[in-house]
Amino acid sequence: MQFCAADFCSVKQGRCADFRQFRPVDRVPDLTYVQRMNWDEEIDAAGLLCPLPVLKARKRLLGMAPGQVLRVLATDPASVIDMPHFCGQSGHTLLATDQTGDLHVFLIRKGSA
Image 1: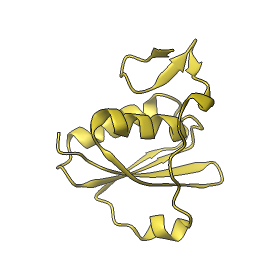
Image 2: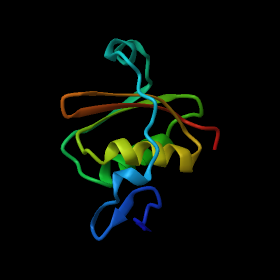
Image 3: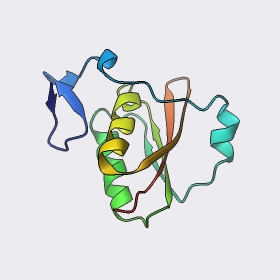
Image 4: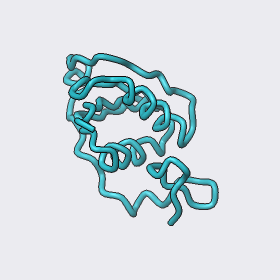
């Protein structure tokens, strides 16, 4: 397996790696919980493909204070693999994830680093 230049997007021959290699993230059971949660900043990455949603999240998180929450909206199917991997590698906490149709919603709390 190879990684993109950003080191958190799994890429194999120009496409995201086999999804079976990754552990699934616990999902929040109801969307209303995600909708009720407060966030400090939001990125709409709908329509962007791997690795752009993760790169945009990384850039926005760099300018945020530790403990603040970023909400990311993405339609890329690979984002359900890439966002948890990015959070784990970067020291951020994936608070919640949910899906409505093709839209994936991620809430990420910035880590202390």
